[in-house]
Length: 262
Ligand code: NAP
Ligand code: GCO
Image (cartoon, rainbow, N blue to C red; front, side, top):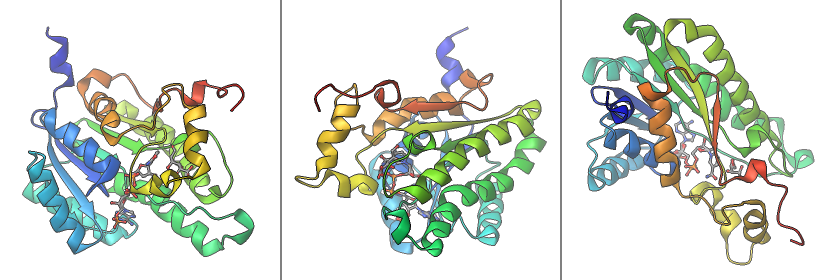
């Protein structure tokens, strides 16, 4: 047997949420290059049009849908549209997410709820929408995009850390509840990645840049493309006995106390 065949996604349909750019875009491109037919959703028409064009430029014929993942009726409508137009979703990547960097005492409960709604509850909503067809088909892969903040806290990200910590446990629970039906649910935990979400932290002179390099053994920020291979692995037959695992793609941050004297 050619072991590489177990990494092939030929004939599979993947949905990557919030994937018009950034980490979701890179993951979707990686899945496509491994053979999957990829679908993505965005909230805004202009992002949809730009996303489809950007995928085409990357050599990927992606299917794009307008859907706010916090709205259950929009999600169920999108999933049934994909099932009719493209096929049953074999691979779900819950990527859509936001962050609000606000000191806890200054953060409103509304702000907190919005982050949890998108970063945690929406992953429940989308997973709930795709699992029934996966059960009928007899297999499925769910990948939740977690974070360093699934394991660590830091100032100003209370809502995000609570949501991503919850997402880690939702991942383990989906794995526990549906593993017997050949559905594997795992998390992918990016470290600090160069995307629009972290752009404020990488502005000229921002102390965070030096700080994160001192905490990263790889001594560099990650790129969205660093997530491609790990995502293909978790989406493929090669990971059929991996379940409830959070695969951290962080250059070693979680293993490292930090550079001495920094
Ligand atoms: P990003 O550039 O901010 O992209 C996030 C995407 O999610 C955007 O396309 C956004 O759409 C979409 N989105 C947000 N709320 C949505 C909703 N309600 N419905 C549909 N789509 C929605 O972020 P990123 O850095 O690529 O991050 C992607 C994921 O990785 C997030 O879950 C993030 O928490 C996680 N992550 C990022 C890093 C990092 O260092 N960058 C590290 C670990 C984990 P709009 O354009 O409409 O806002
Ligand atoms: C922050 C960053 C992080 C990254 C990522 C790390 O403000 O600390 O935005 O939260 O986005 O989640 O894994």
